[in-house]
Amino acid sequence: MIKKVNNKGMTLVEIVVVLLIASIIMTITGGILVNSLGYFDTTTKKSLDKQTLDGVLDFISNEITYATDVRVSNTKPDDRDWHYLYVLKNDKNKGRLYRDGKAVFDDDYYINNRDLQMDVRGFTTNGYRLDLTLKYLNGTEEAYSTKNTYELVNFNINTTDKTTLFSNISSTTQLSENTKLYYIKDDSSNNSDDNEKEGSEITVAKQVECINTKNNRGDYVEGRHYSKGDFVYCDGSWWQLIQDKSNATSPDKSKARWWKKIDKNYSPLSAYTKGDIVFFEKEQCYYQCLQDMYSMGVGSDSSDGYAPDGFNGKQTYWKYIGPKNTVTKDVHNCDDISIRRTDTVLNKLDRLTESQINSIPKYDVNKTDYKIGDYIYNEEKNGVKQYYLKVLDGSGGPGSSASSGWQILSRDWNKNSAYLKGDIVLYSEAQDLGYLKAMQSINKDNNPTTWPHMLEIVNGNPNPNYFWSTVN
Image 1: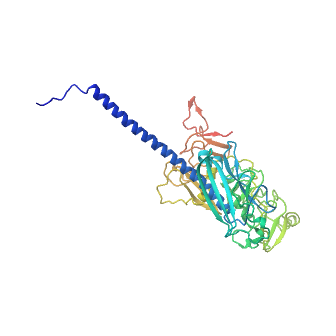
Image 2: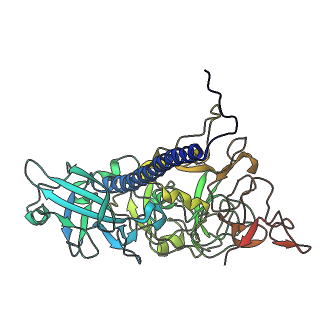
Image 3: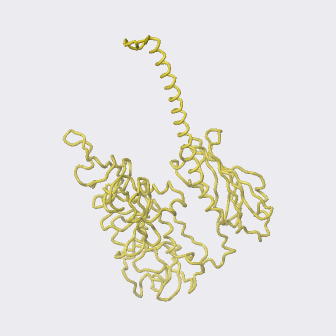
């Protein structure tokens, strides 16, 4: 006899069993998802910890790999030109790397906000080497660590002063504000022929190395306001404004000498500062500037001008060196003489290590898969590159338009640059508006002086084109 199926539906017992099974499945699935998310989060943090610490190690390696002398000491060993590395706690008690009294990276670089620790130990057996260990700590727990051994091939082993060797760092030492790693990158007493090497001659031309994310204003723009210390590129050369003269005329046409031409050869249009060394082509000799020389009102030198052979120049401003540049120590140390230095989008480069910056590729017009976060450079002027960062989706090459999605890494606002909310730029065209902050992501016309791009409210309503606000 065939048993008929009950067509009245499931019994209460069957419903309870189904719900129980579903609950068990959901519990198991949820546990797997939670564990997976936790694993992903942990893996991501470890990857970021590794990236951060490897960047610190890259910087240290560039500093000490070719050092000619190394010490660990509480005080400066002697009166030579020592550099020093150490770890200093910030206001949140997190260790940060310092070089010569200045932070190497800002706090934003230290992703996950770990505590940096740096240990060193020296060895003299079978050559001279330095073991360095970096630790990234989460409280007292080690989140990530890395180490490197430096074979100091340039170490000055011929010195008779044995204290210059490793006798004082034979045990592991933790670096801090009180104990620092001192090192000399270039011992001039053992490198008398340095000036014969390409690019090492000490003249004003070497000051191109002073251009950084704080003072690089890019191409000179007529009518733009400039601050003391700014570098601009004009007529094939870099120039630096050495006096607070915001309305100074074009560097290559100025007769007031407010700008210093960053060039080896003496220029009658250039200002100079004490210690500057130039090559005077007329005599085929080198001269050194004895005192700051600017605002002379002399557009071209005559017999009583300010050139090294002029009456005023010879008497007051220039010291004869000779046909060969014998200067081995640069007295110009790139001091920041500027007055307005708020961070801008250009300072995004400070988040990168030196090796990361050096590996930024040149823009490829045939490449179509650039993505947000990519860095490129598109031109180079006397050794200084113009960098770009992809910040938004869009089409077009870097510098072509804001809609391209490429950000021009420059201190100054540019109509062809895209911006993200919070980005800061300097606007000093016909109107000197100072520093401005982007109030939203921008990929279209956004001139701060065009109405109503700086108004939050228009006719009592929120303004969708509220792009910029002044930075207090």
